[in-house]
Length: 189
Image 1 (cartoon, one colour):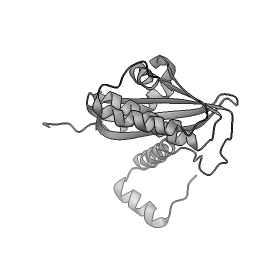
Image 2 (spheres, one colour):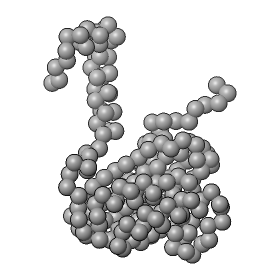
Image 3 (cartoon, helix red, strand yellow):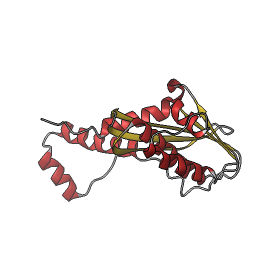
């Protein structure tokens, strides 16, 4: 059991006179803190070499609308999750969110120094643009393509692979959780 200071205990008693409400409040805060805190990989030795899988997803509720990004880095050889990351990025389009998720994922993946990085995205458009199958027609997306290409030079072997949305469930869930925790403001209310 956690022991609280006397002043904190008094303040909680003032706010929540009923023990059950007070305990629920404290439990909810602790659960939320634990859910939003991931183990920091910066303090752990970086993996050097090997293949890593990067799963990224970006989405917006409305297009444009409130948007979020997420990435998941796994070491398939050891079968372990190295890092999960999610962030709300404001009002953006789905495509901008997809690119920004990949960019953030590449930045994080660089810390692990993989010999090979396989980037899994559920956006067929982004994968085809990055692999040169589609031209980037929208001018505002070219800056993101340039940034991805610049970051990609940090890896000796990198591939961009399209996967079905259901195979990207972990990154997709992180995007939705971030958006659920930071809903768009309601206009006209």
